[in-house]
Image (cartoon, rainbow, N blue to C red):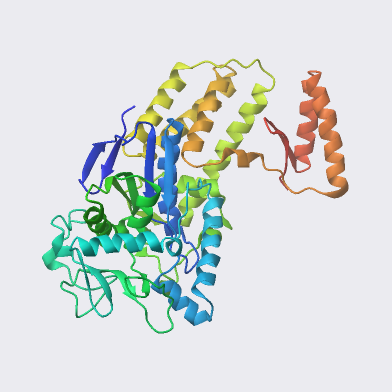
Length: 466
């Protein structure tokens, strides 16, 4: 299958070709743990999780590197404000962030390297840049000279002559060019630093990714990604310093996710529209959130809307019901795995959409076509329901929706639990003896009492409905 991805660097769709056959090295810029992870983070990491899952289902071996920027100005400022160490702040929010993203069914990265644990690698790259004439010293630190790199600005489309010192661009009167960026910041009073031959200090923002990407993957990386906000200056600077230091191409495909807004505005605490991942998951299940994100193409801006989440929540319930009905039906039938022409066409279209720059909106529509076909087959009591169900579960997995959560048991304890377990035991025996009328009557009677039983591969699942 040919896969096409939109490369931000080339600004066009390109056929994907990995460096090493069957293996993909993918670097995704991780969190700076100074605060709680929010739904903007969720949108980005869910998008790259879907990309990773797509590669995995096609049989690729994916080496996924996702850094943790555990030393940064924002972390230092919060540590001073709360009278805690920078390490305590970063470790606390890094753990909370990892736990929050895991709740969204996001697969773990192969490695989560921390900046503070890769100072040696960072020093070596900076030393190389100094030796190659790409870096120079001022009284505040060591800076990269962007004018030395002839293709600076190609990723972002920035005109070097028009770049001014501003947000996230270090201001220093000794800099040769306002766009020159810090590779190493010399130690300041009451700030953390590392002893170094470069001069006691700490890394700048951009150099960390070059150091960790090159340590955990050979270059060029197949894919490097993040949000649109990282294109400039972060990713632009990564390219400049990496290619100057290693004298080779840094990345083959640059992928970037569109912004997430709230009612058209950027999410910010000052605007009162800051929504954490955990806050969202207290109102909606992870599957509904994943479906909400998947319905918009990863490169498009997505405006967060609770009413749309309500719709995806209902849609997930519909998918759940279809799967449960199908599994119940299959327990009473002879199962034969074979392809069904109509289902096969839908499956083909699903993967074709995914291969076309991860077109999840079309893929989602194909998934719902398969759900409709499943419901029709169940209604007509014909068609290869096993094959349809099998492919539907694969689609859900690729899109990051955890269908196994449909089987989670409700909390039922004490004498009620003992009685239910006895009823389930008796019902299971009736089913083994193929006394289906009586077993179904038991399930119907329990449902009227507010207790729903669902038969699945995981066993009989109990759900309280009242």
